[in-house]
Length: 367
Length: 185
Figure 1 (tube, chains in turn purple, red):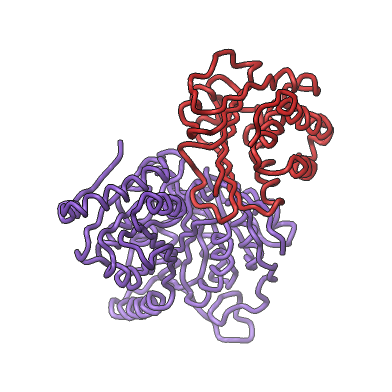
Figure 2 (tube, each protein chain N blue to C red; figure 1 turned 60 degrees about the vertical axis):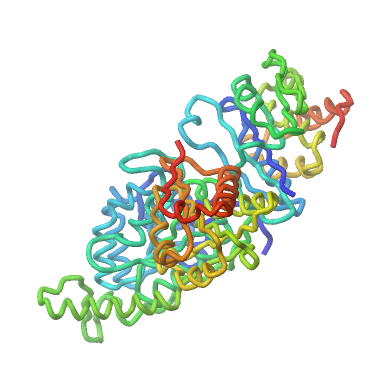
């Protein structure tokens, strides 16, 4: 199929439709709204469900209900809306039903602004709701990757009966780029053998996250943890860019990672052998691959649009073996290639002067 | 090799649309391209701009600090981007509106009476496409014919009556560069 120029939010919506989404529930919020608007146009044309809820809380609970009935259900929002969805996400996780959520992150905390941010990293990977669970979190850097991950997300959600979150940011949602759309798949004909949709002719089923007996709930948790271990082992995704001969490694995800690619090229032009490690799955974090790469590196630079959240995952993988520096922009400010390149070159020069260990604790923020 | 272009003007002058037309033309010409708008508070009443990056390999950063080319359709855009254009780059500005001289000597400043040209083509709404015609004549980004084709396909249907004036403006902008014998590269 030919490439076409797509806007990020609309490309995500079309990819979900082609992946066979049955039902979309949502509430508008910038910079995600075009996704919802696209669904409002297209889903009724296809005879599928689009519903604008009265709030994000209602939307996620509608997703919960549709998911219990075995539908391919999804919602999308931006940071403050995801906060409102946390209770529902926890119920969905506790009930082990599949769904897909898109978070087009914006500046925070609070109402913040509508500019791009990555400050929901902890929220998405660590605390998408109360209780012990992790969603599968995927962070695309290009629109083609956003489409491909979106297209795969329902299969992943149903395979593991888990929440899949596509973690983008305002830049990904608003930008345009050529995309080759995957083929249209019809919505699934068969409902899964755990779904509830009327028990005529078979024994009734129940889906719940309520277990008043402590030992029973512990068993549920153990089953959930065992499943998360399988996901953690099998679903790590990453990209290595110019890492083979690299002395210095930049670690970044999403929009920042593609900006960092330009910075890595610029740093190489200035004589520093830099490479990029780009986690695509934020949970599970590709710690093993990063840990292996670290062995050959003289320094690591983590770049994020937040105060240093993925930084903690990098530090765990690095285990103090190499100095780790951090460059963070917050509040919707996007780091540009020249400032990342300058930081890479600075890291290399500092290291050569033998001050590397001092840099390990250096948390650097730009004004 | 990547070439970055920023198109900037008042909200409503069609800076974002001109960038989209350029992006479509680049993609149809087999190139890699990104388009990213300003969508924040500046959209509400102030200047609007977009960044287009065109290259032969997949684009890294869709944003740049120092663009190779800038189209500035008003004075605030000239004030903002004159200091930022990369050395050796090009700043195309609407000399019908911007009367001050440029300060930089290490960039090529190109004064285009785009407002006057647009009026002759039928509407002051055509400044954006007039400037785009000048840009692609001045810089070898995409063929003028590819931009015309992108306009034919992507001008919204509700503006169908503006297609002919837009194509007129595109060629008028291109003709101005050729007539002035501004060194193209």
